[in-house]
Picture 1 (tube, helix red, strand yellow):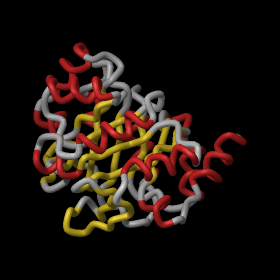
Picture 2 (cartoon, rainbow, N blue to C red):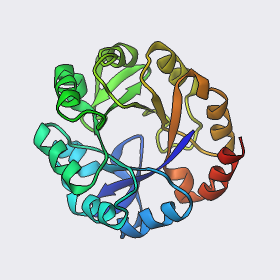
Picture 3 (cartoon, rainbow, N blue to C red):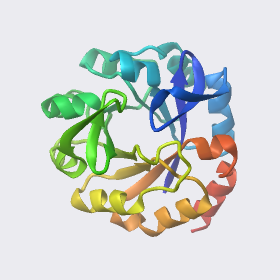
Length: 243
């Protein structure tokens, strides 16, 4: 089970949102590089970055912070989402040292775009599926579509997508526990690895996710829990390594 610390970028700062609401944010650090360093020192093997401004604006806004983290840790895999709506943005991120680009809103609006990206940038494309009651949300979670998460994921079965990041937005940032049932249902409906996101609160959540790892859930994103200390990232890595 891969543990991915989340670094959510808003106006050059590291923040956490509740249920994706930009107006309900908590600033945890003014230095994204210092935050990345903290999680790397705690054993992180990959970082999950989100350009929150980019998700709402439809184009990268916090590229300087992403570049700075990539420069500091040139050998560490980094995945970035938020505002990636064209191939040029993917190209720029990969050239900056990012390993994976996460396509969210555009994957809902234009699945063929993702398929084309996978051909153009093989082994570098992740699809982010954010869902509320099983239905896909877009545009920084401002809109809920009529497309189910499972139906959308299945469109990318043969595309070469590296993983699906599945977020239950009703749980995200709320510290209410991960939605294991919905995540397992998605993972069992596709052959693409699934990374769980949203609501991971304590070690019990990580233990439960490890129990269902065989369903195709290969990682989980940790946000507010590691910033508020309800999960000790170093100890969580020790637990996983002991399995």
